[in-house]
Length: 63
Image (cartoon, rainbow, N blue to C red; front, side, top):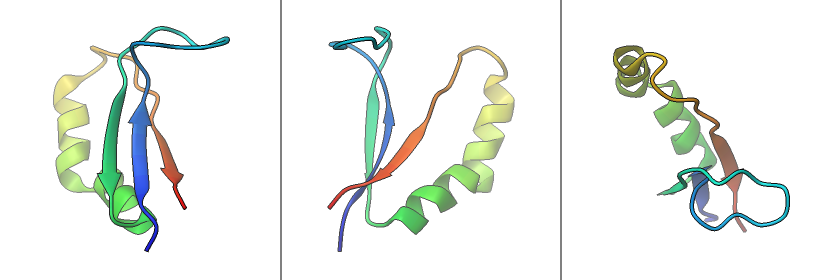
């Protein structure tokens, strides 16, 4: 089974990227990553945090 990674950027950035915080979360499947993003706990956290940060989340499937 391939792994899936949820990535937000930070620290060393190369080429045209912006230097921002990076977080990598490993999931067992693409479906699990999407379900986590769409789930009530994450959506409630987004609502509670408001517009305190710009979020750019990428879900990628690794082989």
